[in-house]
Amino acid sequence: MAANSVFARLNYNFEDSKFGGSLYLTNGTIKYLNASNTSIPEWQQNDIADGVTSSRSRYYKNPHANVIVTLTANTNLIFTVANTDPANTFTLAANVAPALANAASAYIIELAAFKSHTDNLSGLTATTDGNLTAPNYDLATGIGQQILKITNATDDVANATPMLGSFTSLYIGDDLTGNNTIIANDWITMNTAIAPNGNCTLTEAQVNTIIDHITTANSLIATRRNHDFNFYQKSRAIVNDYIFLTRFDNLGNTQNYMVENLIGTDFLKSNLS
Image (cartoon, rainbow, N blue to C red; front, side, top):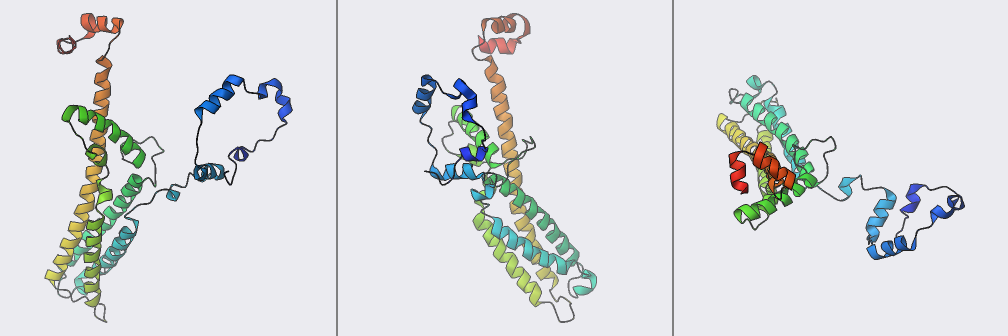
C-alpha cells in the first residue's frame, strides 16, 4: 500500500449519493479495468500522491555539475587577475595579459552555455516554450529512436550512435577532469607569482601557456555542444524528410489518380510505378 493516496490529492468533497446511478461502473467497465491490470510501483504512487514530479532533480543529475563549478571558479580567479590593470600588474608579460583575460572571459561564457546544455541533456530541464531546436533528454531520445530505425534500414546501422550523437557532451567527463586539473594548477602558478604589492611576475611564456590551456578547454566544450545541436537538428530534418516521403506509400485510389494524372512529376510517377 502506498504511503500516500493519489485519490486524496484530488481533494474530492461531495456526497456520493447525489450522483445516483451515474456513480456506478458497468460490469463491462469493471472487467476492462481488471483486465488492464495497470501496475504502478509504490514509489511512483507516492510521488504522484505527493505531487513532486515537477522537481526533475529528484530523478536526474548533470554528471558534470561539480567539475563545471570548479572550472568556472578557477577561471574567474585567473580572469580577475588578468583583467586588473594588466599594463602595470604583469610586469613581465603586460603585452599578453589582455589576451589571457579575453580567453578566460570567453571560457566562462562557454562554461555557462555548456552547463545549460548538459542540464538539458541530463533531463534536469525540459523545453516548455515549444522550442524544438535545442536538444534535451526527452526530445533527443525520441528523435534518436526514429533515426535509429531509419539508418538501420538505409545504412545497416546496428548500434546506438543515431541516439547518442546528440548526447556527446555527457561523455567527456575524463576530459573535463583533466582540464580541471590543468587550470587549477595554472591558477596555483599564477597565485604563487603574485607579489605582496599585487604585481604578477609570470613571464610571457607562462601566460601564453595558460592561454593555450584555457583555449583548448574552451574548444573542447564548444565543439561538443555545437556537435550535439547540429546532430540533433540534422536528425530532425531527416525524420521530417522521411515523414514527408512516406505519404507516397500506399496511396488511396483518389490520391493515386491525382498523382498519376494531375499533380505528380515524372520523377515521382516513375518511382511509384
